[in-house]
Amino acid sequence: MFMLHFATAYVDSWWPGLIILGLLIGVVTGLFGIGGGFLLVPALRIIFNIPYPVAIGSSMLHIMLTATFSAYKHWAQKNIDPKLGIFMAIGSLFGAESGIRLLQVIRAWGTVDIVISLCFLVLMTSVAAFMFYESTRAGIEEPKTVFGEMLKNCKLPPLVSFARSDIVCISAWIPITLSFFVGCLTGLLGIGGGFINFPLMVYLIGVPTRVAVGTGTFQVLVASAYCVARNLQEGFIDFLLVFLMVLGSVVGVNLGVKLCVLINVRNTRKYFACILLLAIVMIVYHLLKDYLLAT
Image (tube, rainbow, N blue to C red):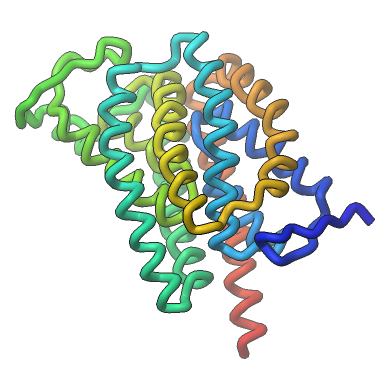
């Protein structure tokens, strides 16, 4: 009962579960300024048995749609630094193309499942451990790191300022290079890149947490739109799958944006780490199950 066939993915799945998944991803998008692909792609593969290429392509379209709505909400609340967003969008576009080309190579090797799962696991474990550790330390609301201070002291021209982010002077190459790395992850893993982009902006560039949330959403929108176009060419987007998830996400994003205003910024970072831990547990379960079946 309540099963639908998804032609592009060649599987039958429980469609109410996809709406619920979209609702959860929408809350994550609005609350943390991320596309939610780090949770969406593994969930589609592990819970709904959607092949990784289709999960990645469909995730990109879902992320683009939810990020559009989320970016509009954050713009209304003045949580977006448009100048910083443009600089980071430049790097993310070049990075997204590089990630897509790398994914094509991995597909040719026939090792998509294990490589993508391990990439998610390593990235999310590292980010979650660092953010949870930092968020539990006593200190100021907005964190500073030694490496972040070093980057801000780098004076490689051209030098720019970002008034909305309270950054007086920084090398333009820093946000562009960081966003290139995030763009690679977007193209390779089918994620908006926000779960990496968010801590990079907060800890390395020094962007205030709420501005990082809004500006991160803008970058997610630009990078995901490019990846949608590329995945359409490859035929890896299931529109029925995306439609069901978007039904839930519309409500979820609105709720997430409201929560972003209400929750203390230190707790925002702590909750973000907890969401990552949830995704880590899901991926470890998937890897162990595949290993036991193989043996």
